Image 1 (cartoon, rainbow, N blue to C red):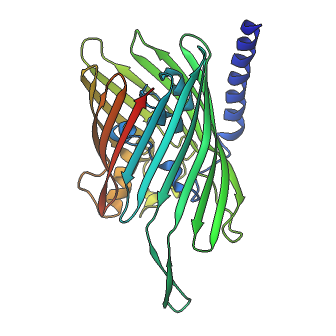
Image 2: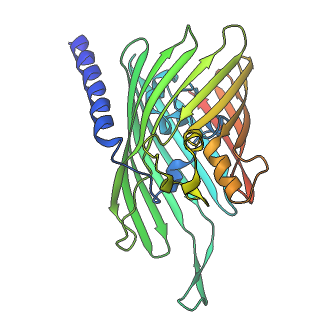
Image 3: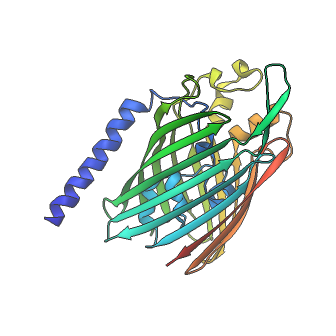
Length: 333
């Protein structure tokens, strides 16, 4: 009976991922609602360029980047993160994952983005008060080990935005598939993030959830403690009009292609320490177009992975006027 259950679960997951890929990957585009869903959720991913779907990070925050990677986690992990974003903006998150038997892993998560206090004005520009915009995302994740090398996963999440007297509610799903060969130190994944829509809008204005089709791989070297990461992002967005920068229509295909690439390198001097760096081509181009060229697109970080305790810290630049620092801790029960 258990063998038949696992067989059917495997088929259902594969067929679901394939059918949704065919139906949705060319039908969705990024939008402006719940932009916090585009932010990295761990210092490790931040250090690798802000986007990664294949690195087998031993922390439950991987659930938001690729739910299939939950299968690589130890049982009973609690993760906490905090990030300084733009001026006055703070992001924080928490996740808990638990292995259920040999093939099932579940997770719950919640993230909060506060934009700080802002002046509220009337139609004449007179200040009449203040308000504090915020975004909140909560959800559950699940991963199933399909075989010794393959794992599939899915998230269901709800996002709430509040600006003054207006609010918005959206629902979304993530679907991921991962191939992992530990002996060859190779991992490859494909993920559809933020398949969803608004169910309550800001004053009747419909906005899109920021869908992102991603694929990537991680490969370690045989005789050096180094791993290379390549992640391809926004694979359904190839129109020049998708780039909100000056002279976007003059972009050549080579620049368009590079804007879909995030590159990361990780060095592991010991089994307990990592040092990582990444380069996000799209972020670099957008920051340079906004007038910032210093360290644009670059990110750095380091961390400790002990038996029970994990710690990471990273630096990245998302806005030309300020840098962001993210720290995270995780504890294994």
